[in-house]
Image 1 (cartoon, rainbow, N blue to C red):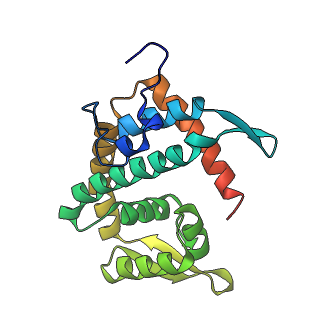
Image 2: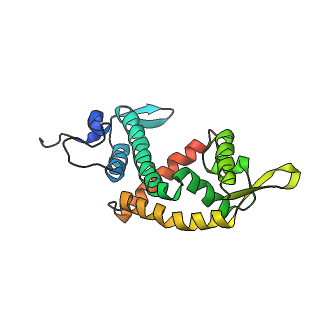
Length: 194
């Protein structure tokens, strides 16, 4: 590579979107997240709505973000499958545990699902005896964990932690902190549209 020439996968989206970052011998969410952080700092600045936007990079960064999420989700889903669970189910159980009697609308909002999708998932969890639905004030249906739901959550939480530690563990604490701040900023903007 010649000096000053950027050979980042962000400059070559086909390297990133084909599973591994070809030519680098690296793969996994940590690499994509590093490239996401780097890509946010790179690019050819253009102004849009009063803000600079790295036009050639913005789609690649968006795809890297999606790719990192999907890779981590697949790893967590595979680890939870022997327990008959998934990341989506774990997130719902975790949110119900921290918000007893939470309404379906609020639960859908905090788990980033539509009310219909959350309703179907909650029905499956209730059918498995993991949650119970109960009437609250003004006929709002609330959700609570059953003892079986608490048991599954207690078993699944260390599994989720281990997988995410493995997936993101190659990032240093500074990189992880930077990623958290960047994602909180992006997620906060997304909440303006919901």
